[in-house]
Amino acid sequence: MNKFLSPFLITWISLFACVEAVAQQRQYGLMDVIELTKSQSPLSRQAETRKENRYWQYRFFKSNYNPQLRLNGTVPAYSKNVSQAPQQDGSFRYRLVEQSNNSLNLGLVQPIFFTGGTVSVNSGLQFFRDYNPSDPSFGEQWGGTVVNVQLTQPIFAFNALRWDRKTEPLRYEESKRSYVEEMEFLSAEAVNRFFNVLDAQINLQIAEFNLANNDTIYKIEEGRYNIGTTPKDKLLQAELQLLRSRQDVTQAKINLQIARLQMRSYLGLRDNEEFELILPESIPPLYVTVDEALQLARQNRADFIAFERRKIEAEREVAQAKGQRFQTNLTAAFGLNNNGFALSDIYQDPTQQQTFGLALNVPVLDWGRNQARMQTAIANKKLNDYVIAQDEVNFEQEIITLVRQFEVLLSQIEITKKSDEVGLERYVVSQNRYLIGKLDITNLNNALMEKDAAKRSYIGALRSFWTAYYDLRRLTLYDFSNRRLLYIPED
Image (cartoon, rainbow, N blue to C red):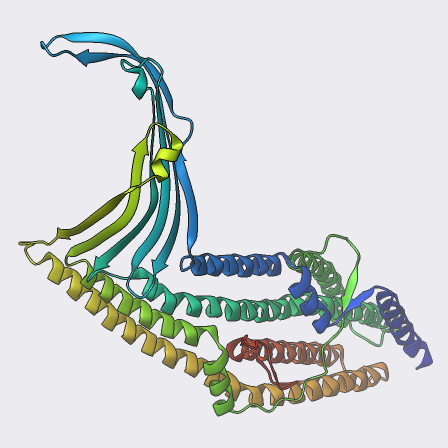
C-alpha cells in the first residue's frame, strides 16, 4: 500500500510547489481589476473625454444667453482699376480709379430668451479716400454712427432659446449621470474579463492536477498489469486518460494566454508581467428590496431624466411646426449718425437715425402643407409618448427581475461552494479506495470529473453574482453594500 501511496504524495507535493510558484506572481483581486479599469483603461478615458465634451457643450449653450461684444469691419479696403464712367452726352470715358473704403463696427448684442429676439447697441465708423479725385475737396470723407440701438423681434415664431433652456440643462444632467453609469458598465465588463481569466486559470490548475494524478494512475495500472492484477483494457484506459490530460493542459495554457491578453488590452496594461487572479469569495452584505431599487432608479438614473427630456423635445417639435406656419419679423432702430471731411465732424451735431420695419411671409395657399407639418409633429409626439411609456415599463421590469434574482444567486453560491467541498472530499475518498483496490478506474474518473464540474459551477455562481451586483449598481446608481449614492447631484 505504501508503494502505491508514494506516487500520490509526490503528486500533491508537486501541486503545492506549483501553487507556491504561482504565489510569487503579482496577484490581483476583483476590486483591483475594477479600479484599474476605472483609472487607466482606454474605455474609461473615452468616457472621461465624452464627459468633458458634454461639459463644454453645456458651456457653449449657456453662452447663447450672455451679451456678446463683436467687432467687424474691413480694414484696409483698397482698390485700383480702370473704370468706365458715363458722360452727359451718352458717351463713356475710361479713367483710373484708386480708392480705399474702410469700415469698422463695434456692437454689443444681447439675446432675449423669453421672446426670441435680440437687442443690440452699435457704433460704427467709415473712412473713404479717393486718390485721384475730380474735386480735391472730396478726396477724403468720414462717416459713422455715433450710437445705434436696434431691436429684432420675430412674432409668433418658434423660440429656440426658450426651448433650449428646458432641454439643455436636462441633457447636461443626463450626461453626468450617464458617465457614472458608464463607469459601472465598465465595472461589470471588468467582472466578465476577470472571470474569463479566472476560469482559464482554474482550468489550467485542474488540468495540471489531473495530469499529475492520471500520470500516477497510469504508473500504478502499469505496475498492476506487470504483476497480472489488472487487465490490459484498464491499462489502456489509464493511458488514454493520461493522453487526454496532456492535451487538456496544452489547450488550457493557450486559453489562459488568450484570456490574459484580452484582459491586458481591456485594462490598458503595457508590461508583460505575469499575474494571478484571486478568487472573490467574500460576498458583500446586501439587503435589497424591489421598492427601494425602483425608487433609487427613478431618482438617480439618467434614463428617467432622458424620458422627461424626450417628452419636452417632442413638444418642441410641435411648437416648431406651429411657428413655421407664417413668419413675421419686426425690426426697429434708433441712433445718431453723421458724416464730414474730418473725424471730428461726425460727433458734432449728429442727425437722428430711425428705422422701422415689419416683414411678412404668410402663405396664402399652400395646399395643406402647414396642416400636414403640424399633424406629423403631433403624431410623432403621440408615438414618442407611447415609446417612453413602454421604455419605463421595460426598465422597471429589468430592475424587478434583477433584484429578485439576488436571493437565488446567493443560494447558488452556498450550494455550489458546498458541492465543491463535497466533490473534492469524495474524490479523495475514491482515490484512497482505488489505491486499496476497492474502486475501479472508471468510477475514479467519474469522481474526478464531478469534482472538476463542482469547482467550475462554483466559479460560475460567483461570476453570476458579481455581474448582477454591478448591473444593479448601474441601474440604480447606488452602492447597496456601503449604503451610499454613486452620484450626488450638484446643488
